[in-house]
Image (cartoon, rainbow, N blue to C red; front, top):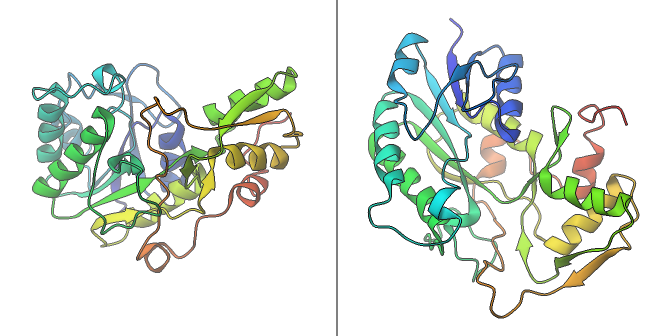
Length: 288
């Protein structure tokens, strides 16, 4: 019998690719949206006000993929910690409702403070802001209530998702097309992963028995190099992109690049570098 997978955030940048790949693999996909429905997101769900249990029961859901970005927003933007953060209660309730089902939770490298480099799954978490703390809170809630859960952490997501380029590269491309300079940090490092490769990873994990934490260990690259390599791959001259350094007064994570102790053995491939990853997406791009 075909398994039913609930994709929370199926109208979003990552969620739409996840829903599409699961559907192609023969799963019955139930996708949620918050404000605007999408081709594979027809069930309205608001993390902050709605309980997920009626959706799970009505659609007889076997597995849950949490690909929404509810950890970001509100006081998470300011970095101000709140001991009574309403997010904690909502995360606990959501995770408890998912008990007994397979869960793939899409987390982030933001659970680390960025003072080290190439973080592995076994490294202790050290969130430096409210966003990172919320990610860790959700990881812990799922771990407490669900026996069959994997937390998948990634760094930057990039590339085309159903014809839509990620907002970072789209912004850089717009600047170059207008002949305007734009600057990026040469001393901030990420492990950018192609959105469709992360979606394929999630599709694989839904059908696997692996649990615990898993990192998407894409090659380490500076933010400046990331944008230069991407623009070349998209056919734009990156020369107007200027070099910059993190100002001493700016409180940001300088290096949240990731490594993995088990990614390839579980998923069957290694994430691609920026330029070849974008070149592989020719079928994903809209006609230009």
